[in-house]
Length: 359
Image (tube, rainbow, N blue to C red):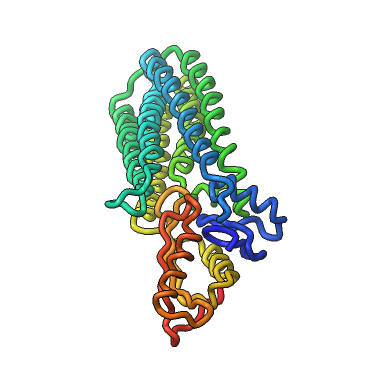
């Protein structure tokens, strides 16, 4: 068995991740490189997930620094200009900065090693803290922006010092782009290695911090364009209505992003099974092991960022006595669990009348 989770769907023994397969028809070296990018070493013990975990930590650190600087600048600009769109953008950036703290906690707590009371580790904590971050984005970002926009429509306030607003929005766009490029730098190679387009990978990846930063930065760049349009129309028309509508649009955008993030974290918390292609590849890899005659049941469940549990029923080769079969099963479980990516492997014997799984 080449990988702890699966062999490539098109080439036996090529490693894949529980998030998706290696690039079809790619050479084995390329597949292994893709494997290392997403943090899934082979059973031989090469390549840990450390580099990918460090990349996720860097992505969150860059996002936090950028959002904190931008939040302060937008708050000052909002006070000087009186722009509703800038108030919405300031709320957005403060929400994002606070959310990065939750994402840091998610990264750290999910990496704690298993203990007797938590034999599968603490991987799902990443989804809990990321869920808190998404809720924060909804409340502190979306709700505040929409509320302020509605208040501005009901009781318009004049704006001034538009140039300051434009400068802050322009600088914010550059800084947000830096953070966004860092998330692209992490997500791009991972998506390519698993033969996915970028958006698909961000939506289905088991790494909630990458998904959150990518989504928040995307929303921030779009929101800055909306805010700039609202501020510009306010200056041109002399009416605060476009500015107020810009604030509401920013809030609605944040609400949509927050709902998507909440739903993705919810799905991982209640039990997200690995990609069907990975299931097929894993069956194929198991059948390649000399000690496995057939597989009759298999469940691969993602239980944390780049963490998977394996439960299956197998029929072993030979006709050993029961005591020896138990030893062989435990040895097979240990072999599968050599990788840090596999948090737990539980195998049972197949019944004679159970149908075999092919792929």
